[in-house]
Image 1: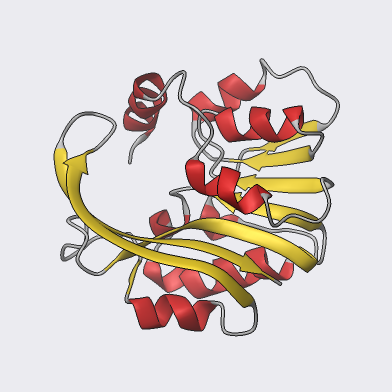
Image 2: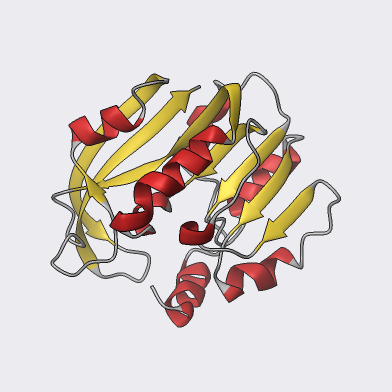
Amino acid sequence: MNTDRWAQYYTATAGRAPRKLLLEALAYTQKHGLALDVGAGDLTDSVHLLGLGFRVQAIDNAPASQTLSRTIRDDSFTFESTDLEHLTLPVATFDLISAQFTLPFCKPENFTQMLNIILTSLKPGGIITGQFFGTHDAWNVPDSTMTFHTKEEVQELFATMTLIKLFEEERDAPTASGTLKHWHVFEVIAKK
């Protein structure tokens, strides 16, 4: 998505509740320490995590997200403007990593390296949660710059971790902008 479309997306989703998958993953977190919000977007999930006592590092490359980050006045919150292809993270640092509808937007040629950086930054016992787009998703078209997976490929991504949840869903539903789309999504919660 281009910059204007991300701003439109944030406007369309304003006032939403925290993502249900993140709320589910919180039941498995052992410590409310440092959380990473990858593709933080409208920062709803970051604000929710702050309210629970987490320190939050949010990352997103959309200017609209960076603008929103300036409204959060909390010493437990930091924001970094970066994209998934240029991600650098410290090793074994985060207790929780939330990547809600973010990781599929990484280009296929950079996906493995990006995910390895993210998983390496998770502490032992830490939880990661997010979604992966399946191969039947309507956005999986020739020349797409997004990454799509089969169920077996998603399982392989977390082969060295405990896969707490792997839920596959296919349905036709509108996007945030109201356009009808065929969604093929894998929801994941995993423990390192």
